Every structure is written in C-alpha cells, then in structure tokens.
Image (cartoon, rainbow, N blue to C red):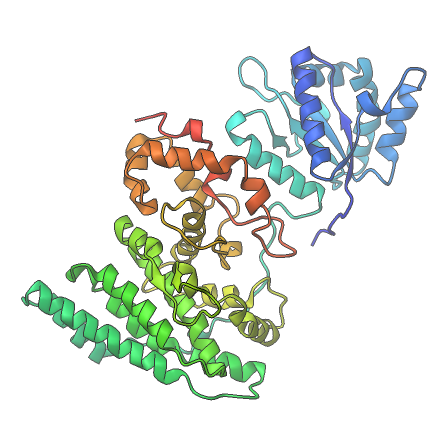
Length: 480
C-alpha cells in the first residue's frame, strides 16, 4: 500500500500560452494550495536574474518535491517534442528521469486543454503514461479530487482490505416455512381493512420478539457480544419477509413507521447490553425499510417515513419530544459492536458496525448497494428534505462501502438534468414542484463544503456524498 503523504509539494511544469490559459493554470495552482498542497510555480518562485535551468533542475531533483505535474495542452506537447523554450528544457530533465525509472510515479501528466479536434496531446515520451484529465468541464471536479488524493498518497483505486468469511457461509439464512404460510394470508381475498389488521398483528408479533430480546447481559467479551448481536438474525429475517408483502396492504408505510416508533419507545431503559444491541438493531432494520421502498420506487412512502414527526419518549431534558427519523440512529450505541467486529476480524475498520451490516446483507431481500443507498438517501434527505426537523444531519455509517468512483448519489444527481426524471424523484424529498427543489439545492450550494465536508470518518479522505457535490442548481432540468 502506498505511503500517505502528509505535506505534499509539487512542481508545476507548463507552457505559457494565451492569457486565458495562463489564468486557468493560475486558478488550478491556487486551488491546489488552498487544499494544502505546497506548489513550486514560476510566477511565484522565479524572479528576474535567476538561472532558469538551475531552478528547473533543482525542482525536479529535489527530494522534498513529492510530485511533478506536467500540465498538458497542444503547445506543451509541441514544445516538449521540439525541445524548445522552458518546456523543452524541462523535458530534457524530466524525460531522462521517466526513461530511467520506468516504474516511477513522481511525474504525473495532467491534461488541461485538448486540440481543436478534442484530441489529447502528449509529448512522445509520455505517450504510454496514464494521466488525469481536467480538460472536460463536467468531469473537472471528480478528476481534481482524484488528483488530490493521489498527491496525498491515497490510492485512487485502492485494493479493498481482505475481510473475513461472512457468517452466512456456514450459517445460511433459513426462512421459516411457517412464516411464509402465515404471511401468504395477506394475498388472500380479504377486505383492505382485514389485510391491514393482519399486517399490524404480524408487526406486533415481531415487535414483541424484539422487546423480549432485551435481557440483562454483563461482562461479555467481544466474541460473546458479536454472537449476541448475530442472534437477532432470525428476527430480521422474519421482518424482511413480512416487508415483501407490503404491496398487498394499503398504507403499509404508515404501519411500518408506527411499528418503528412504538417499538423504539417501548425498549426498557435498563442500560443492559440487550438494550444497547436492540437500539443498534433498530437502526439496521430502519435502513432495510428505506431500502425496500426505494427498491420498489415507492418514493412517497420513503418521504412519509423520513418526513414524519415522531415522538421520542426516550429523550430527556427537552420541552418537546417531537423528533425526526434521526431517533432511530444508534449513535454511540454501536461503539461496542464496532470494537467487537474489529477485534474478532483482526482488522482496523473505519466502522466495525458498517462492515458487519454490509458483509451480512440479506441478499434475498436487497443488494449491498441498495442497503448502502438507503443510508445515503437518509443523509441527503436530512440536508435537502422539506420536513426534516432535527438540528444535525444523519451520518450514513455505511457510506464507505459505496462505489467511490460511480456512486449511486452521483448517478441520481447527474440524471436530474432531465425534467421527467426530476418529477419522478422529487416526491422523495416532499417537493411539489421542480422549482422548489431547485431552490433548496441552490440554498445549500455555498455551505456544502463548510457544513458537510467533515461528514466523514477520521482517516477517510472521501466525505459522505451529497447531491450538490455532483450537480449545480442551474444544471437541473435542462433537458426533457
């Protein structure tokens, strides 16, 4: 694994072109400095009377310079190949290094501009080298972030840690035949009211099982703690099976939201291990619920569950116990599960809880990607949702298990250029019109990096993804 670089320092090699291009380069270099990357740049560090060759040679060979960035455009490529001007001088110094050290990664080509036919122009000695491409406006931010990661020594495409064998390999999830037969009754010819009553009855049975779990446990080691949490699997399997029948029940989302609220409030505050585990377990179930309604594209139900005012009987010291869906977030309660998973796996996961949840996703119900998306939608709703009343945003503990290079939030954001798609998706955030939603996006743009940049794990480079990172308000609904 590549070593992290705490204080990166780069030398900028570029060709003087038009005033507009020089301004673009200056803006790029200034952006690097604002992101903590020291830069050696002729406009700042080379003055009249200096020996330009000595300056370039010193910068290229300086061990304190962690990377040399060659900013490529058609002029740079021509001067490098012709060995003319300052670029030609730098090429003589750099190319020798590149040819001598085939495996080196100190020298990084960065495409700034293409030719008039949209071709990338590289000097001959860099033809086989991979590059970063900042020449396409729509991909600039994404490529820039990748480049900054590289400069800090963060693997752009890091190999995931080798995990442990999932528990379900040796202990496959078994769906109770009895439960299937019982729940199949919801498909019958009963009236809508009868089905709703049955659904509520089955939810109450599961709630009772959850509350029966809360027993006094003490002095558990990490293995025992993890085993105790794993014993909730049968309850989860039963609940997820019941969720598959929501399409047969009118207003199932309201019954499920009440089930969550009532079960959570009924947990006895005995400060036992069982009490703690059940609160973490409800957090996990909550994500499965959101994943279920997202999977079937029932965005009105997702909005109801995320926008509903809940009444939290367990919060103390408040004049009002009105709460948002944030009440189902387990917060510091999952610290012990974090520690147990990390210890038992012998790994330093950023979140042992997220590792356990994502490694043991019930794939008969939803995919790992759908489960993580549910967490990310909760986060985005807490920023953009019309009816979110909690002071702080939801922290998506599983976001580190999202695809970093083509994540689901980015896919949703990029599709918002379509008016038709936006009309489909905005009920998720409880907006009636595209204009209202666009105003919300716009109102958050200036504060994104201030308020939400630190919504990430300590030690993680990437913060949790928000829609506003991938699309600006003025880009939305530009197409039919």
